[in-house]
Amino acid sequence: MENENLFISISFDKSAFPKKYTCDGEDISPPIQIDRIQSPYIAIIIDDWIGPDERFNHWLIWDIESRSSIPENIPRAGVISEPFMAIQGTNDFGTTGYRGPCPPSGEVHTYYFNVYGLDAKLGIPPGSKRDAVMNAMKGHMIQYGGQALATYNR
Image (cartoon, rainbow, N blue to C red):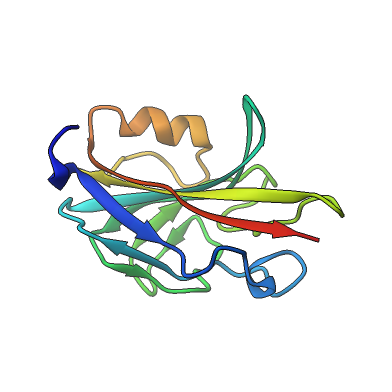
């Protein structure tokens, strides 16, 4: 991916998660800005790397028609039609849709926002887990976004 047009820029407007988007607040999905998108579809994955080789997934959402922003408070359903059409997977809390940061007391965790530009819908069922989403993206990823990071501690 040497061509600059292959990279998507993603941003979350904070370096630390506002309480509103965590288990200590409303626990709703945060707003996300996406720039330089040229793909017909996007997928977003938010993970917490809790160890060198261990991640905890907070959100899997895919089959989103190309757009420059994701508003806050996306419904927690496998298939959503408002505010746009998309499919959501099962996070590592065992629920569908977004679940916010909820680290153990006294620990600071870093959350990685990744966006992927895809040439087609993935065709996998709602509730799919991270590995299934990553496997389905193979051969369809035509853009990749640099990670946006945010931290949270309780």
